[in-house]
Image (cartoon, rainbow, N blue to C red; front, side, top):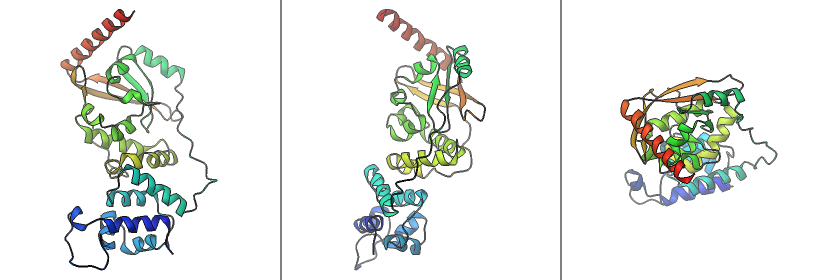
Length: 279
């Protein structure tokens, strides 16, 4: 007897022509679409395990396996959400299971005072999930026209993987994406990171899921930001870990060259003129 999850995977597999994935055709077959062996290879699982899922003999695939299926079947965002819904009802839904507690988002007054002392520099407080919890006016000035600050709260990881503007704002998008995925692996806790990954994976897609569980840190390089007004800026990043109970870090962006420093000065002057005109 099948399950909603198994039926969906089998039906989706049957609609995909092998040549659309660069696989050779195999002549006339009784069943259309991808073979089980094709899908199993793309997903990195055994044919026997795939058979158990499609036939309803395994009802609890892990989030990692669901991500692998979504990538292997080239699902779009709506299909990824539907896949997770089918997995939930197939496994029984776990209605009494509590949602993991989100990380601490309270920024201590002493940390807020530290940010005040860093004005008019560019600095912010974040956690491993990428929430922007507090920031200087310099950071607001740098990022307010990029789209990042439109989130509630702003979240750098979500912005990088789900907002098309991020690929323009960050010319080295792959580097930034690798950094954000690696931060998730580091914490703040396994339960909280898993909760966030499960929330983000359906809408972020393969560019996010293929980066999960990479244990080697990406190289530390200057951050390039293509600003809508002053064009390219380059920053060195200093990260200061706050006490473990905070599960947060203070990030300071320092101009990596004179051009960036002059551009930020110009941006501040333009902002001051606008504020005086409004006043």
